Image (cartoon, rainbow, N blue to C red; front, side):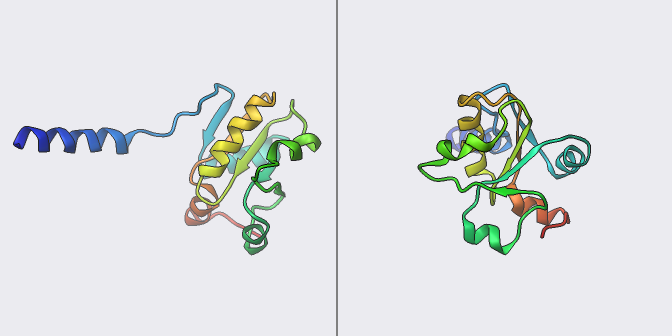
Length: 128
């Protein structure tokens, strides 16, 4: 019984310490500081994939709101596939799915903000 308990504790530590690894090589997970540098130094397309109501509460300056729903892939026609895209959502789950869709649609460089706008705000970064 003690060995089983030790195994379960160790398994939990391993699972909880693993970061989400993107499915595709052209998706890069970034933190808030990396994103600030990226937004300042590179010409990127910043995409907020939250709902319209979430977006209206607050957003990162320069973001375009493209709601993640069943028609998400159809809404991407105005984005440039060869220009880097930064996606974020509230906590990072939706943006991870959106990043995979962007990759499948032929976008060449995709950045996904780890922890979404929630983490961005928690780190003290500015929102509109």
